[in-house]
Figure 1 (spheres, rainbow, N blue to C red):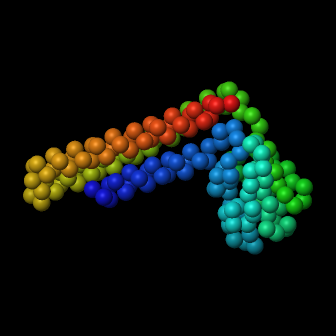
Figure 2: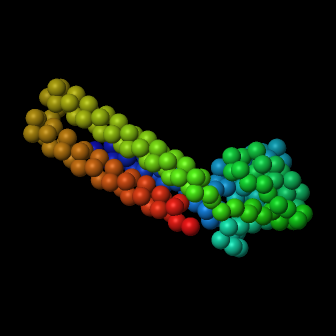
Figure 3: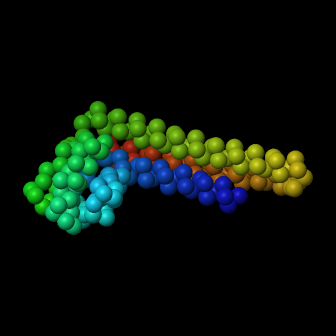
Length: 180
């Protein structure tokens, strides 16, 4: 049972990480989590080569530890899927996030719901695997019919709990995106 619950927790965690990278109109440093910078020939995460701060609601400020990295960081941001052009003054890079249009907000909400549905499918697949495991144990006479039924009920309750958490996450992220 623990292994299946652990898998469900991982699915939930993966969804929350995906949601952190979705931009909701205000600057969020987690948007830069997946950006890698070439640091002396080694791909390094942006957080390891620069100080990232949010001085205003719609501005992310990136201050590299070394001035020579400004161009590399700028290049990494340009090739990423952020869709924002960085401004730099030679020492600091600023990312100014424009207000989201109503259409873009609706598009992002659709994306949030799609990712949420994918997470629910993953949870249900874990439930199916757990139920298959229980049936195999029952056929091999490792557990009784009653134990199998109890285990299936427990798996179903676990599934319902995680699906409800995903629903809550979808709702929270959607309302965050739609809030102007």
